[in-house]
Length: 77
Image (cartoon, rainbow, N blue to C red; front, side, top):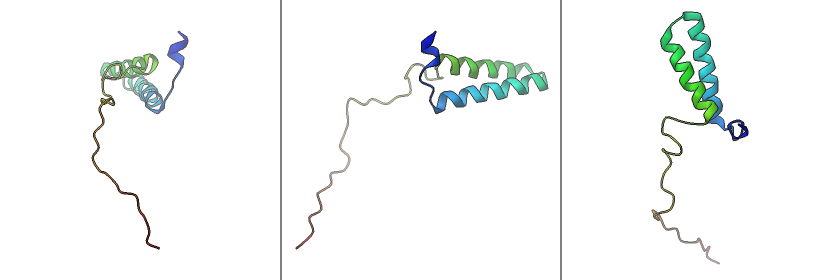
């Protein structure tokens, strides 16, 4: 339970605020689609889970390719 309340980053806070916003709008408009959207975003923020899964959208960082090589600047004397 303590792990659910740790590591709050900007994305997780945005999902929480979006879920709360959809929840308020669902209550005002009485539209069931917004209830489902509110539930989706609130569950994602509480469980720290995104649509990509657990680190599903991350890139492969083990293999790095050098794109540019820079020479050190040596000013003339």
